[in-house]
Length: 246
Image (cartoon, rainbow, N blue to C red):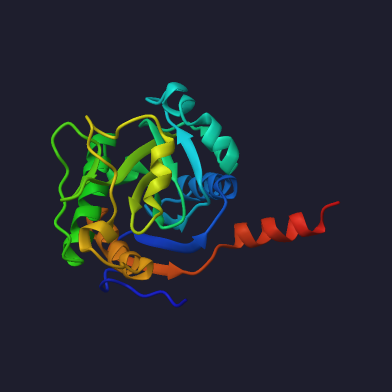
């Protein structure tokens, strides 16, 4: 997939966006680690962005609890859904196909951003993306995530290691909503999880959401140009390595 720029500001940082389709959670974590090393070693403020979907699993962040998944443990086992404890903010979250995982890899110090400022920009980019899609959305005070008319549309949970961000935000586009009942936790004081398909009362194409999202992320993170890639060499190398193994 060819790259292109938002405008001709060659002196400003670039956002390199990797649109990966469906990717396993562990390979995606490793890719984020590798990209964070690359970004941290540069002096031009480049930002990497991983956009993908995952097979069904539950991740539990620093604000989560084993109790979040206790009631649904039997259903989780019957569906063979993995539960992972991860080093990020936020609580317990369910991931599945139809949910867009958005992982910006940002050198905060280079961009002069605090963690709070970065979160504000990340959430603003998602709200602006949904506005393009004619889906009114908001970030309520003292809540982390994006809400629409029908409920919570996106959950956020970031990690920062050596000044570089990982993890990010998960936007429900058209997931099987019944899976969210496996979590014994409400996202925010009883507010139900929802998705863009419910907001629109019809089908929403994942490709349409991705196409709208990347320019807004580039703009809110002050990148003068962005480039799109349909894969990443680290993932291809990993697949070759596994194929050659015993």
